[in-house]
Length: 120
Image (tube, rainbow, N blue to C red; front, top):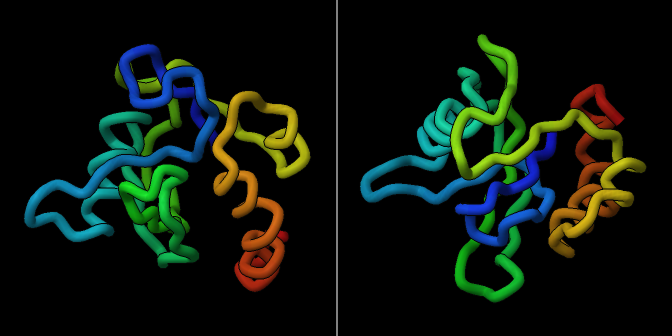
C-alpha cells in the first residue's frame, strides 16, 4: 500500500509507503502502530524490520517494516494523507513523484525478501 502525501505533509504530493517519525521514548514497532492508526485508520501488527536506508537528504534513517493489518480498512485518515492505494511493483514505477530509495526498495530489496515471505 502506498500513500500520496497531503498538502500539509513533508514533501507534499509524493507517493510513498506510509511512514512517520519516532517520538521520544518510543520504540520503532510502537511508532508503526501509532502512525498507521493516525494516517490510515487501521490497527497493524509489526511483523519485522526488512531494510534500513538514509533519507535522500541524509537527515533521517528509514527503517522499512513488514506489517499485518489487524483491523480496519486503510483510508486517508488525516491531512497528511491525500490518497491511499494498493499498488503492484509495476504500478509504483508509474507513480510520480516518488523518492529514489522507495523505488530502490521495490526494485532491489523486495525481490529478495518478498518471496521468502510468500509474496513475490
